[in-house]
Length: 157
Image 1: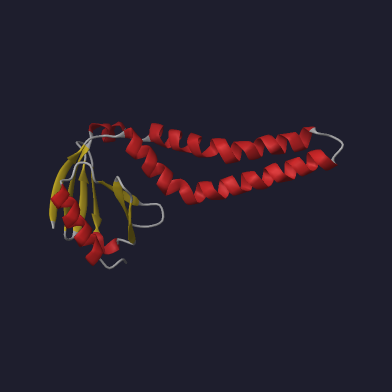
Image 2 (image 1 turned 90 degrees about the vertical axis):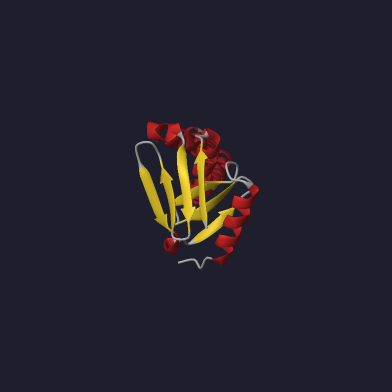
């Protein structure tokens, strides 16, 4: 396999990738928020003073609804400006390489844990928090088929 494509910067794809990577951690935070809401509501129903239980409910609501979007937005803002120029992606039988104008990353397929396919991208997972996003849009139909066949033959680490 030898696939070489230019991938333009796409902030929506970056946001979706960050949401995908952060999903397990954010799920725990949302569950904690739900627990806080229930405890706060119970405190409001049973307690004489509504101040503390109201604060607990507000904190729970923040955990459930605000932490995820705020975390993703902050992560997007903290990304280097280097990525905003787009990148060249080279996939061969041994390596996945991403080259930005000022930086380069390489991932050896031998370290791959799994590949998760969505309608728009493949997420090559090289650990629980290290995802290499392979967008389908810039690839031709033949390249997508070639990559799908290649991934089917891989043995995860």
